[in-house]
Amino acid sequence: MRSTLIPVVAVSALLALAGCSSESAGDSGSGANSEACTQFASAYNEFTELTTSGPADGDVEKWTADKDAASAEFSPLADQASGDVQSKINAVVSDLPVDSLQLTEADSESGQAFVDNSNAVAAACESEGATITLADFPLQKFN
Image (tube, rainbow, N blue to C red; front, side):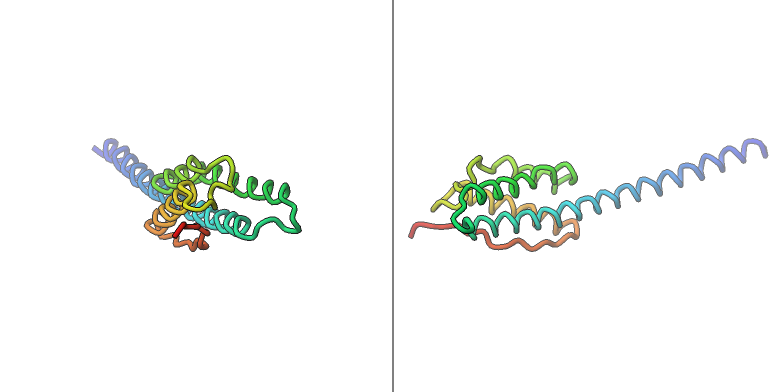
């Protein structure tokens, strides 16, 4: 009977440890989403600042290149995230137009989608405990 008891206790201990390690893996996912959320807010705010500031010293080519580089920062963030945060970041990336000037045209559908999708990312982040603040993106409307 003693020889049967030792393996049962050992297996029970291993199962308990396996349970603990899966809990910590869940925590690291939340940490990854928290980091992705923070980086998303930073990329969004940088992109918004570039979009609203216009070209410095009239250098449209540099301004366009800077905006393209800033918008390219969104895509890798989806790979860092998981779950709802990942799917919301993917929506931002998939709806970005090739020409970022389209986002700021009056009554721009792509601009509205960018704002709505970005707010959905913020809501997904907040539901996971990572509150982020996004700058106001300049949507122009015809009156």
